[in-house]
Image (tube, rainbow, N blue to C red; front, side, top):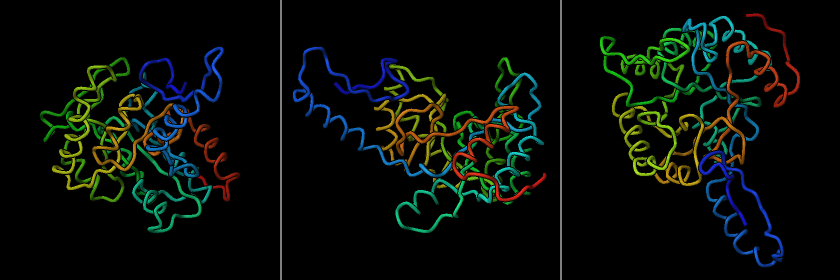
Length: 285
């Protein structure tokens, strides 16, 4: 039978298994039907475009593996330039795949999750310096209106101030960021999420658009976790695509990203070489 992996909800891995003694002909129709269900959310438009993911840049949290020092982040952008690659947005990618517009010969997509304030304070000036654009996925329900009530996350990695709406508006206007959704509350996936999945998707999209004027077309699953029904709900609520981290079946609602942590410059180079071969120049930041 066709099924997702046994971990109940998350990384969708389609497996075709034949119960002992059952003839292949007897499972053909349900298998084909399941394949068509999967194809309903398939077609990965980014199969030849690397997508990178950062969470934090230059925040100064020494115990946080997700916090990439500013100079390291700049070297990673310089590495991208050395391959002759140009940054594009997800909308540009999808439009080009639909025959509307043309992509650079070597295109890459930069993304950020977690809504941390360092994206505004540190990452944005570096992106502008290099003439690059990134997608940032905002946890809309954790964004406040001013600095006095700024949300601060506390974990074993340190204290992480989040963005506020005026900063997000400036990020969008700067040309360094396109604003997308990372849910309302960053929930862990569970059976209870089914009941509020629609509101997490719709309300975050509505709030971000209301506060920034941005057209929100893409969604990043919190913790990179989702199941088939989650992906279908993302599709039904009008998102063009969705992004995750773990690998599995690549679809437009399960677009893979290379997650970049502290001391991961090698991972950036490895990904670029896998897509483009060798660098075409030797640039030094």
